[in-house]
Image 1 (tube, rainbow, N blue to C red):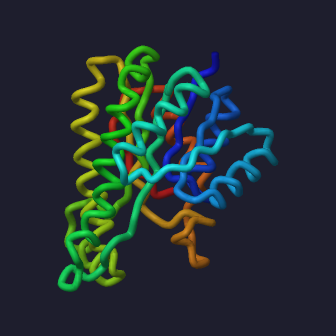
Image 2: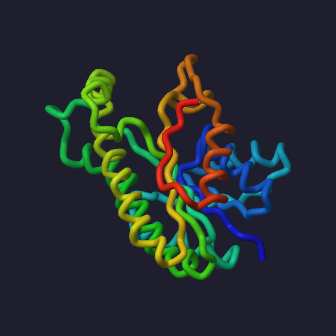
Length: 229
């Protein structure tokens, strides 16, 4: 039975490139997004490159939905070998006007969603000596210039969630590595061409970031790496 990669947060950029890379390496590919249209598009695009992917619609903010998702993937493929967490939510931009729910939504995706997925797939990951791969962002960094950027462009909630996610990656690594499970993060510093954030000035290639994820997965020796091209 082939290894299976569960990719949460499917879009036209990094996640699709990771699906393509791991699919070409022989992995079964399970794609997760909230909307059927996003999944249909991703599956069709991958098929053009000879990658067969299976779509699973789920709301990754909901821990019960994630548990059900992992069970459905397990029933389809026999287990989860790798989780790639690429999901995010923007939430509130102006902290003075944000509701609690506006701030919580990105956190639920980046932190509690990721943790729920790891918990649900833990036995599979342990048995298969699997991996958890996370798409991070430079908004996570503690730096005045980063905070100024996040404030100017109304990305405050996303910055908070990415910062918390970055810490979670380190904590998960400390917890899971003794169990034989690798945890790695690529912190993306820039705009990925063709992604939802690209308005024409994208400077990073999704395929190159996917190669970086594959390198982390293969070597299993670095927890977090910053990629800026």
